[in-house]
Image (tube, rainbow, N blue to C red; front, side):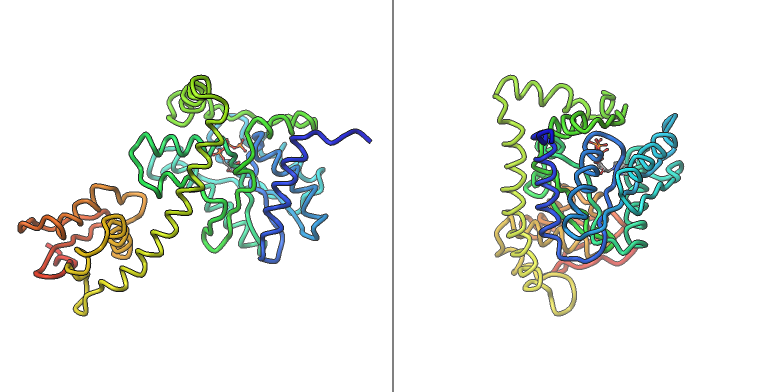
Length: 330
Ligand SMILES: Nc1ncnc2c1ncn2[C@@H]1O[C@H](COP(=O)(O)OP(=O)(O)OP(=O)(O)O)[C@@H](O)[C@H]1O
């Protein structure tokens, strides 16, 4: 018997670890674009899951945005059926007309379609193919836009979306290993033209910035950036817990938040309390930025009679004597 190629073994180990930790019953579904990362993930899952007593299927989304996208989706599905994955689904989504530009719209439509299929099959989890290199890119992009610990935490290993656990088993696996694993298994991954399109910041980071950093600082840079994400994710979780307790403690009996209680909090906790409260008031997280939280903080710490702070989503917050409260609509 031929020896197992090390990248194939490494990816199987990563999938086994992820499935060992998964408490939920039911099949797992791999979200597969046909790219090297998710193809290597699907191949490893097809091998590992049945040996752990789990069914494993695959979903591929056709955004209909590129020539040949239907053929790509059909080819991925045909391969998956041969690999023994079941169920295998191709989902066609409509992207045109959604807000936020084609990339954001495609992502939103993709995740909605993927979770929809997962719910229908009562799946234990959706497996996503993000790798260590995607994580390093995410951290670098977050650093460049001045993100705090939340942004620098990168992508979590697990998060729940619409009640479906999303797992990223390859978050500590180098992208090179997914390509090598595909080659060792005789698989021919699809190459997404967006990944090399210089009009995307992530593609420029991938093509230019990270190779320059590795060239200047050594090959450990990618692992180090991914480690930064893990360290900050742990710190961030603690700060979020502290903020949840603090938020409960500063609620004013008449509604809103008590200013004296807010003023006593450490700035790192106060900012989170205000961020969490703004979300409670209906501000969409994606639109809620540092400047909104800074303006809310100013109502507490540098109060000089300034007017209400407008939050995304339309709510306005003002200070009334010793509390922050929702301003009357104009
Ligand atoms: N069209 C799709 N259908 C199903 N899942 C998808 C699709 N596109 C992306 N995904 C899932 O989302 C993950 C991240 O996709 P993204 O395009 O951000 O990264 P990528 O590095 O290009 O991944 P890959 O090499 O697997 O395509 C993929 O690994 C895959 O699990």
